[in-house]
Every structure is written in C-alpha cells, then in structure tokens.
Image: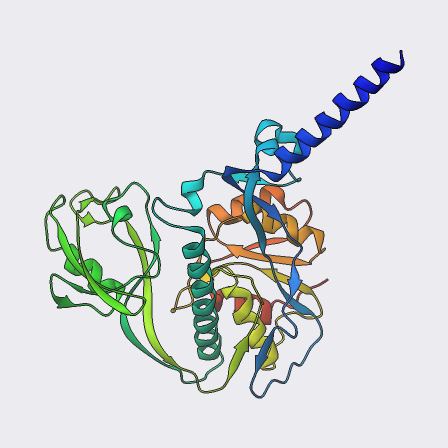
Length: 334
C-alpha cells in the first residue's frame, strides 16, 4: 500500500513537472491578451500646457507573446479574452522578432509625430509637414509585394520618376497594365534600394494594377511647440488618436468633461483614423478600467468592439477632427 502511494506521488510530481514544462515551452503561434486601459497623464508633455478640466484620456495596449505548447494542447488554459494568431500574421516570412520589435518602436515614434501634427493643426497652429514619399504601413501576405517590400519602407520613385505622396504613387503604378512589373525606389532605414515588383488586378477596380500595399504620407515635420510622449516599452501605431486628444486636453480644450475617455486608432497625417489590431482585447481593457467612453475606428473595429463592450459606450470615429468636435461640443455626461 505504501509503495502504491509513493508511486502515485512520483507520477503526480512527474505530471506536474511535464505540465509546467509545456506551459513554459513556446509554440509557433502568437497570443493576444488584454491589458488595462491606462491614463496618458504624465506620459505626454506639451510646451505651454494649461489643462482646463478634470478627466483623463486613456490609451489601451495589448500583451503579445507566443503561445505555450500547453495552451495549444489545452485551449482552456489560455487567459480570458485572448486571441491566437498564426505566426505569419505578426512575423511575415523572413522577418525576425528583433526586426518586428524595431518596427514597432519606429511605428510608435511616427505615431507620436503624426498625432502632434494632427492635434496642433486642429487647434489652429501652423505646422510644416513637407511630403517626402509614400510610407508603407501594410503589406498583404499574398500579394506580389510580400517578398519584396517591408513595413516602414518609404517609396520615393516609380520607374525612376519621383513620387512624394500616396496619390502620386497610385497614379504612377496605375499607368501600366495589371500583371506588368513596376520598379520602385525605396528608402529603407539608411539606404536606398531599387525593387522590381509584380502587379495584380485590384479587387475593387479590375482594370487598375496594385502591388498589395497600404501607404500613408511620409513627411519632414517641424512642430511650432515642443511635444514629448513616452510610453516606455510600448510600441506600434495604434495610440495615435489618444495621443492627439491628450495634446488637445493639455492645451486647454475640454475633451473629457470630467469623464474617463479611452481611445484607440492609428492616425494618418490628414487626421483619418485607421483600423487597429487586437480590438477585442482593447475593448476588454477599457471595460476593466471602467471608462465612460471608448472611441474606436469606424467600420469593422467598431462592430467588433460593440460585441465585447458589455455596457461601455463605444463611439466609432472616422477622423480626429470628428472625435475632437464630438468631445468638445457634446458635453459628455458621466
């Protein structure tokens, strides 16, 4: 009887050790888990700040890590509100984790600059932003560009002809028949490369050729006042909208009316709010902080957020200008 008890104890210990090892060992997929929404107060500094009202602007982050083997074998061990993504969704073929981290840091830095331009222009400041090319912010994994173009590339010429804006890029690519190659001059980090990329038919306009990228305006920016934003190790572009709202709050605009206002959304240079990833987790994070209002990109992001809001008021917005008007004129009631 004693031997059986000892044997059972040994087997139990081995089982726990195996489960612990499986929990520690990473698998191939990535998992997104919710974090709490956090206030931007003391994270954003603006020259001449004069906040005029109570209330805070909150940003929402998402934890991203590899799944464990145990989580793959036993899905119920995953954290509540998590989503599993295939590796290629976050690490395209040929991309390392270090490269992804560098890109996230670059995206955050750019998000800070764009938010500053958008907010200050909306407040009446003159901001110099000279167009310098088309910045690649998205690459379709199944498009011709997938193996050639990288996130963060700045396209400055098509077949040797300079392009300075996304519209110029689209116009020059559109001069050829779908299926023909195009030669793109790209600034990548500190070097310039020339890439030959195939084209395909646009799913929306079959007669128009595309290479399968999403672009935004790259520009040399000169701000009229100093703006400093520091989120520590947080990366990515999705905090552009809350950054811009916090800048407006610090410069005396009442965008909170004493409420806790959370927001997520990447900003384009013209103020357009672009969709973001991890919207389910971000909505859960807003809920956990018990915010009064959650501004999200209109469209699919808003529909997804509303599915998980559970009482949090979700407000879809298409631009910073729309969000700014809404918050300064509606007189929020908390």
